[in-house]
Amino acid sequence: MCGKIAFDPRVKLLLFFVSCWFAMKVTQPIPNLCMGVFLTILLCLSGKGVVAIKYFSILCLTVFGTVLLQGKIPGMIGLLLLGVMVLGRIVIPMIMAFTLIFQTTSTSQFMSALQKMKLPVKIIIPVIIMFRFIPTVQQEWIGIRKAMAFRGISLKAGSVIFHPIVTIEHILMPLLFSSTSIIEELAAASLARGLDSDRKRTCTLQIRMRSFDYTCLLIEVGIIGFLLFGNAW
Amino acid sequence: MKTKLKTKDFIYAGAFGAIYVILMMVLVSGTGMIPVLYILSPFFVGCVCATVYMLYVTKIKKFGAILILGLLFGIVTSTSSFISLVWALICGLLAELIARAGKYSSKKMFLLSYPVFNLTMIGPFLMLFYAKKQFITLCEQFYGADYAQMVDKLTPSWIIFVLAGLALVGGAIGSLLASKFAKKHFEKAGII
Image 1 (spheres, rainbow over the protein chains, first blue to last red):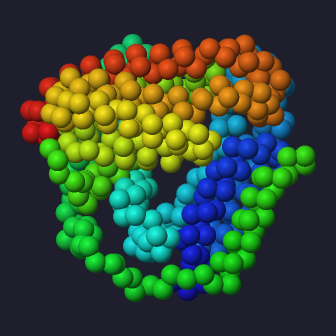
Image 2: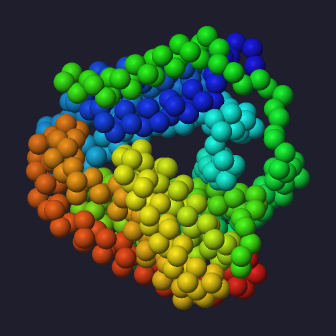
């Protein structure tokens, strides 16, 4: 863990919501890029530099793309291209914040931070499991695509349009079957570690706010202020 | 069944929530590039996600399960507006009550509850209903004036009812498919 700064999970969580809100609301290119830079710095500090720079370069590409392309290419192709670009512009900051939360924080760390926020366990467990499970589903999805390719079933537009039900079946069934067995294992593993005991959980890692957490928090509050009152900008 | 939800059920809820949300996002972003298809997305999501929902509900036959799924869905869609979280909770509660009316054992009631649950999909679109101007300006800033005009034409104020109808129809088709798949695969494999 040397050379990495472990931010407080609560700060990261707030950052996630702030960046989602930001991405949906702010359309000017410069604030978009500023947000991207901020997220990139945080990711680099948490030891995810390579991924961060990759995302940031895609973000730059889409931001400049939307600015340059807007209204330049007429017709359906231009619209499609623009659609992809705008999607990237909205989604990439969210993905960056998501990576920051769930790939630089362990599940138990996250859980104890949420418990410090006095949220009920009934909400904490589903939420944590959901976010923990999203990468797993992605992995399964890649596996299913490969298995389909081996059997000569492709996900081309033609097959999706002409045989929608068969396509749904081919994708959903393996996904659900493999996920169900994974869930069962996961549930057994977490029950074995005493997730369902009524006693208060303890954590060996101390979760507390430190100076860089406060700095980060200050910037986040600044961004919220900008979102609330900076409409005239 | 009057048992309370246990930790294992919460784990199931979270995991199925993940599957549901990922499928939803894949469908919405896949169709989102073309404006007309984007409006149809409640229909597609209904068709596909019903199977996930049905498997989930038949696995956990307890009060609160559907509500938690609604909550998870709401948390993800609340990134666009806070209203959709409230809306998702309302839909989840309604679906929960329908399933409860069948005492969590009637297959018909489960099938009926899915279209109602699928109304969660119009949550992100509710903005069209109460803050249309804001939505159109957002579109204009992102995509340019032409696109905004097109969206404006496509979405008169009654569109939300069309969307709700689409969500219901999609949900109904989806739940029929789901019961077919359940017979064909799940019951044979003994998952349910």
